[in-house]
Image (cartoon, rainbow, N blue to C red; front, top):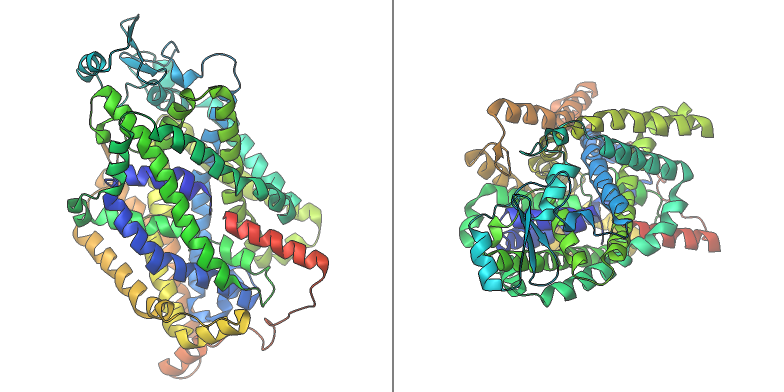
Length: 573
């Protein structure tokens, strides 16, 4: 229900894609992709009692899908950890008795003009070394509109020139390597490694707070935001679509991939955690509650974000789409504004970024733990002793940390977007969803899958889900992909358009995940015997021993408590 997909990514994709125009394909994707695919990801793990790789022994021809998901999960952790580190550096600077550094314009990284938001209508404008304090909104708008840019606000300059260390025209020192972020990144990795060594129970205790406290923070900020001038204009931007935007392929790709990303569909975590469930756990009813609530959380976060965007635009006398540069740092520039308008802003800032840290831990822990499980499944000797398992965790963490360090230069944000778009989201998620739906709809056979769901949960699979697996998901994903190819444009981040060679390299990055599917498919056919038809029949025949998956021990009191904790973890993811 609550994860980085809701808190961090949803709002900036809405802002990037025109607000209301993004909501339409997003909500459609929740119904067509989100709910059916989430049910299948849980079902295959619970049915086989295996992790992401071994679960696909149920359909050996498509085991390459499992390998592809593992590769994509590995690439997704690299940008994930940087987002977590961003939260840590904001948390560090929240522990102060002075003004929060993103609310003032007297820092070494600030440039002219710099506008410090202080209060409801008041502005402090720093230009040429002087401060201009204006209380009249009309006068302020007229004065600021002439010099305003999307990097003028103090919180935007803190994000760009301090957190990202982008070069500015005042101090070239801030264009170098980002040493403070290196420390924060190291803390992020050490946290994840420590928790995965400690085990699933430690995360289960944390999510009691992290699955509920974000709603308190969102509601406090939303209520405050709705009282501000211009908030309704921001809300209307989110809710009223510009239908012309729907003609852009990127809007549909971002919306569909955001749904898959939010529910961790195509990643390693869901199937791995579902394999811990008892065979008769009713995941079907859980999904019918969890997925809609997850979508509601995203929309709630969007309402909060756009209320403050509307207020900022009204105060500065500019259009909402001109108030800030779009990108992954949107909430880090919007939420600090909300804190500055509350009593004890330092306290609220600490509470929010502590919560953000633990939500990030929940989101990353699941994928990191799934990767460790995959490695130990491939190399069973690594889990024979606790010492070997600890070394596996540290080895994987060190490998990923070394890659993440490439994101800490002044061009790191562009590498971040490049890896994230081509390696862990966007069109790659849609193509993986296409192959997964083909697997369950045609190779597993959707009627047989419905019978297996009924054996596990006692519930009958909806006709809507059957149609989605067989027809809707393959048709829509392939259509969006063709639409994307016809309307293709180079990747663009803010004002920077990636060169063609970078986009070609990006597709090569995507193929690292996708090529496993045809590769394993051909390998299984070549290993088979007889005609092509016979080999295909052998390739869709389960390799799992009969009865191996249906082991339902009598539940003890500890089992029931553990199962409840696992339900909480799945809900948090």
